Amino acid sequence: MNAPESESGQFKDLQLRLKEVWQQFQDDPTYEHTSVIVPSMTVNQEELAKVTGAAFYEERLMFALIRLRNPNARLIYVTSQPVHPDIVDYYLQLLDSVSASHARRRLHMLCVFDASPRPLTEKILERPHLLRRLRRIIGNTNRAYLTCYNSTALERQLALKLGTPLNGLDPDLLSLGTKSGNRRVFAEAGVNYPVGFEDLRSADDIVRSLLALREQRPGLERAVIKLNEGFGGEGNAIFTYPEGTADDNSVRQRLQKLSWLSGVETYGNFLRKFDAMGGIVEELIVASQTRSPSVQMRILPDGSTRLVSSHEQVLGGSTGQAYLGCRFPADEDYRKTLLEQAQKIGVVLSGHGVIGRFAIDFFASRNNGRWNTHAIEINLRMGGTTPPFHALEFLTGGELHDDSGLFMAPNGQAKFYTATDNLKSPAYRGLLPEDLFEIIWRHGIGFRHATGTGVLFYMIGALSQYGKLGVTCIGNSADEAQRLFEQTVRILDDSTAGKKQGMVVPMSDRYFPME
View 1 (cartoon, rainbow, N blue to C red):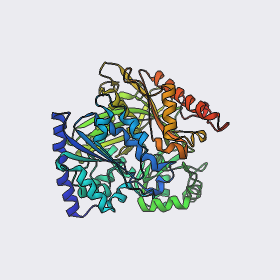
View 2: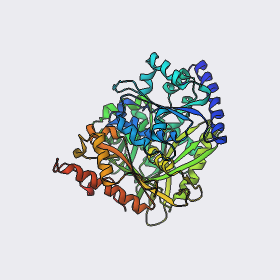
View 3: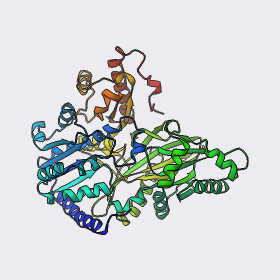
View 4: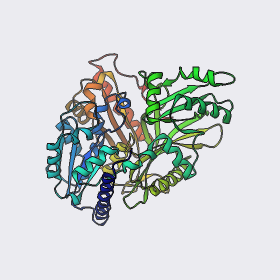
């Protein structure tokens, strides 16, 4: 639903200031400004509830504290619950150009003390005293901007309340980020994408589309039904065609046997959400070799597009579609093709007025020949691959080379990483942040500026309750990054197994061994 004309117009006027702030950054890297970070997961809360430790995903943007290496930058970070002070210290000690104490004076950590399962932005908006406090800390709004995990009408309202432009998508363009909108963008960009149908609204639409898809792809065994606003693989259902000829009756019967990533989903509940938000049906591509790479991009306030990174995503779960981790960069066999297709998609999105960060998921497949790639979906927001790349970018000070897709440090050394926000074990439960840091320092697995290698930890707040955290293991080769990951897992396991025998997940069951 579009915003009232007055609100939409006010927001567009406010966004013009973002171009001014951006230009100042280009002219002066030490530009004095205030960055407001609101890491709200403003997505379907029913789907988000299926993610273990979702409340602590607000910590995934803590890498933004590294912006304080600019001695003239101030940063405001708002969360639902307090962030442990040792976690804040951990990020500040990673700064190598200013002292941690100097950075701390320019950092304002605020929280709303509200653990209810609602978007953080909504919680802020209903607290007028907090809004006044934020405006007071921001001060000169002509030198400030707002960064959020994703952009919705709530984030637009917050930007207007604070008087600061939003470094992200205009919510009027959110339809481009739905699964149906993605397919329209792919068609406009002229890139490969799976055969299927979009803008579906009911079970009858699903049945008709599944039958039509089988006609276009005789012998097709499985298809994917996706909610328009699903994310992270949640909201995707796998449909298996009946043997022999498929007709209306047999397809309806098979719909009762859909499979989902989440074990708590039901057919009736899925159809209820499908009726509410709509969705798509598309072929499930099958090949002897398959991979799930992605490309991250950014559209700047002036409309220009920038490649950010490429990854090999690691997917799992019961349907094989849940994001578990990634490796940077994507395989060189098809990396150039991915970057070229991503650029085409970026140009289309820029033409529609999109700004901010987004990711494009691809599907790479091969049957004893060359790799084929299909664009699968566009996430017009930050995602699981955002924190690890920004850790690399901020810690090493390097940049991505568009021609090769490699990230080069200032000394010319290529950098690689293995990362996950889903490293977990029952044995890790009960570890406090200070316990984790003792393990890090004792075993020397932290990040080392001298070599530009090591491990960065994040989502640390989820460790004690859920036995889950994120790690980014940076190396000077893909093998070194993977070794760091495996070493980190062993150290964490060895540090906890003595107290909880039999609770550590075996390395063979970890989410991604090297191929």
